[in-house]
Image (cartoon, rainbow, N blue to C red; front, side, top):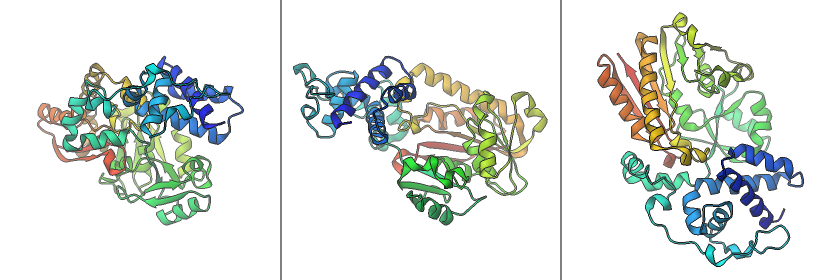
Length: 385
């Protein structure tokens, strides 16, 4: 495919997404219909689509409309490339630029930095002077991070195994088990290092949330909102730690047993009705449902789907979950709260509300990781009685 044909394909996919189609479904559907597209073409189109979704507001302003065509015109202008060089109408290229597609300047900082208007005051209140830098980071692609499975290898051994397959990495300072992929990221999922359980795909800040816990042999840990089980596997990689995984929707954990086998660790999946029989736990980790504002680079559609009403619902849910799990914690145990959010609403305010309503609990640690640190935005708090 020519560069112009890739842009036209991206326009068509973006139009489907803007009409309500899930992002991955739209991309997969196009790939199935376009057998002529090679792996480089598919990767380039995917990059176009995700960049346009991360920068939907600013690209729409630069391109004259919030349409697939407008976003791709805006993308080219943002990159300093004249759209007319690709919008020629020849062969599979988009039709030439019209007078109405000249674009305009930004009407607000929220538009320039691709944050919904209603959210911008909360975003700036949460991040202060770092707000524009964080918003700028959310406009770009997220780095690929790997967690080294210390049950099977060490960091140096994992890096060597990956390097032998053309995947170059470097240490990430956020966590001692974290590697940043600097070359060959698309090879990871099919690499022997990954298939043999030497590494897992996991953001460095997510790893750091687990590493901050007081893990030692004999400790019993409940990963209460386990989802796919990434943190459960990271917990189980610590020798002698007994890990239990729970999710309100058990189907989310259906791949966890196979992932645990590959990693050479044991994780016990527990349904809600069984929790009381396994309690108390020395540590309960609540990686709570949240806005995902810290991971919007990876899931940009989430930024535009979030509403003020939904954010309020999430904070109410987060408070409710903390109240539900507190009785599961051993009297001398630790309740750890985490979100992949950078918003105070879901972080310090939720913790403050919980401590205020439960005066026998106190927060002994609160920590943020932000996208400006080269990681997903994360927050964690440790609560003790």
